[in-house]
Picture 1 (tube, one colour):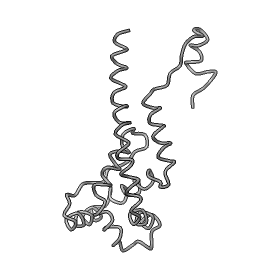
Picture 2: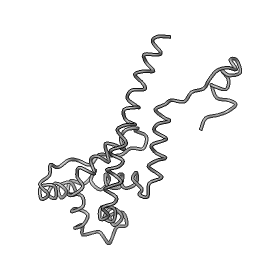
Picture 3: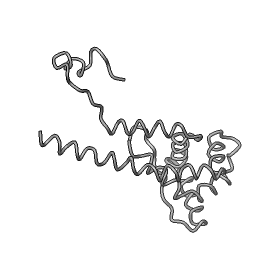
Picture 4: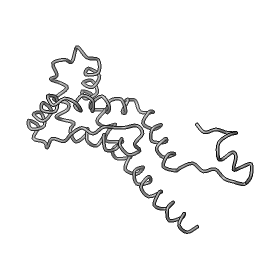
Length: 164
C-alpha cells in the first residue's frame, strides 16, 4: 500500500498539482494474475510450493520420481519452484507440473507416508482429480499472454524514456 500524504508522489503533487501518478504496469498485471488465480476452486500457489518442497532437498524423492518417469516412458524434469514475488514463475512451475503429471500422479498414489502427512494427502487428492489438470492446462494456456505483456512493456518504457 502506498502512502497518501507523505509519499514522494504526494509531495511532488504539492508542487505540481497536475502530476499524474501511474503505477508500474508489470506490477498491475502481476496483481491481476494473482487475483484471478485466487478465484479458482483450487489453491494453485500452495500446491505448487508443496510439490516443489517435496523434492527440493531429497535425493531419495528425486530418485523415486525419476523411476516413475522412466516407468511412464517420459523424460525426467526437475520440479520448478514457484516464487510469489517472481512475476513469471507461476507459468513455468505450472508447465513443469503438467509435463511431469503422470510420474507425479504415480509417485503420490504409491507413497507410503500418505496417511501420516496431511500435505502428502492433499497433494495426492490434487493429482487424483483430473479436473485439477484441466485448471492447470487452462492457466498454462492463459499465462503466456501476461508474460508477453510483462516482457514488452519495459522495452517500450525504455524507448519512451530515451525519447524524452
